[in-house]
Length: 310
Image (tube, rainbow, N blue to C red; front, side, top):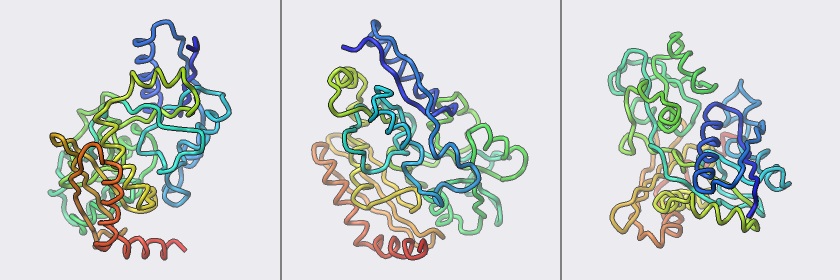
């Protein structure tokens, strides 16, 4: 087995927390290994003045790190699973998916108001079309404003009065010890989270047997099952950050309940469907759920979104 392992990561506060968490887990499980981090700047990190949906969506936070992995400059890459495209480059695999943090979105409000409490015209900040479309569906009377920046930057903008509330992923706040700022958890009955939200992706080369032995110790069965179903949906529907699609899996006994949504950008049209899948058939079930959503009206919504992008 290798004696030194290099982890590739972005340099944001949250990305470094995630990479250091995996570093500490590897060191705990394999005390003879020396683990170091290598910070890699991605395209997504360099674009701060525009919504990501306008410049390519998924892949913006992983491409340069994947290149380093393929070039053997690093041994593993640690990503947020929700940043991962449906297709991985040839030669790379998802080596491990550790246990998921809280997968839901949350509202942080300036005055502790809940989403349902805001008056007409309230400004809600989010950089996600998925979040925006679902908010518009249940609160078409509020104003959705784009917001970029790291966690601290977004919270500062909220406190400065630029927004009445902002919507973020619970996982980042929990991991950075800032969950006390959360006003309201938006569970799947209110807002379906992004595919893989709350989970980490440890990406590896498919031919690295030494790393594969380490990955087996880090993989969490239930999380991998749910995320596999969610990603199968994403791949089948050809979803990305620039279209409002979402899928969430939850273990229910010996089955997995998959819930998915496709919505128009203005939130007026929203297709929400469920699929109860046996655990050992979660991948074809995710694909079947995508077909179901498309047949129920999702295809028409996506065709309109694609037409608007031209």
